[in-house]
Figure: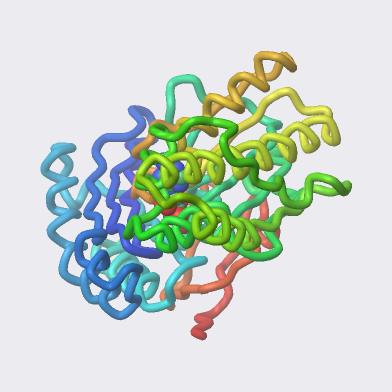
Length: 350
Ligand code: KG4
Ligand code: ZN
């Protein structure tokens, strides 16, 4: 049988990501278009503009990926698109295009869970983790600790009760007047800050459990900023204190999750796993405890098509098939995924 080549399409938020994954040779090509410049003017993602821009960029990016990989359309054996969670309009663009192309090419299609994409993105790297492992998923929409026994075998150990870690970075950055997207800008400013000048709380670490709450940190940041001298260095020191609080809180909960499960491998994924401070902290912790730690290259921490093509490949290989209808789910609990999912549920819009 000829090798499988899966086209992956990611359009859950403000990045159009395309990739081609080869069953034997791995990733052949990946292309990405970020809408950041367009949304910056509004200080955040404008969903309707996001959907329209995905419409404009999808087909040219697919052509570009095919050209880069030297792959013809008729070589593609399956199409995977992000079916949720995310912005419904943006998701529907990718789902409609993905399902239609698969139909036109006479190949199977599958809807992929965006967070499963993030979760398995470290598998695209040369030093891929073996199962089982604990995953810290930290993105703009989710903060979760997950016990991962295998593909589709996910147990949520804890999650954020309010803001996700990335959302906390973004909101705090906005409050400090750092613009959008806030995470990377705040992280860069934190590098200029001195540690220990300000001390921020580590929310929910004084009680047992693995849930998170980050929404209080932004108010704490604002109050600290207002009471400070409001110099450029004060701002950097406050950014540093904020980042250290998030990082330390995540590290404390990771340690608990590892102890609770007895696992020895820790994986981090999602946009915030690109954060240098977080990587360094978890590395230090892992070294001290004798664990292994894994994460994707920075480009695959944030949204991308490669992770969707990869998960699509796994699910298509396992025989999973999407019917001729397509579906998108703005909310979609990851635990409802199975090791081998049968048909996806019908379209759910809202
Ligand atoms: O995974 P992702 O690209 O999209 C979602 O699925 O949400 O994550 C985006 C989030 C944003 O909140 C962004 O501010 C944050 O990841 N982020 C960072 C860094 N790079 C991206 N947060 C902290 N430090 C970074 N270096
Ligand atoms: Zn994401």
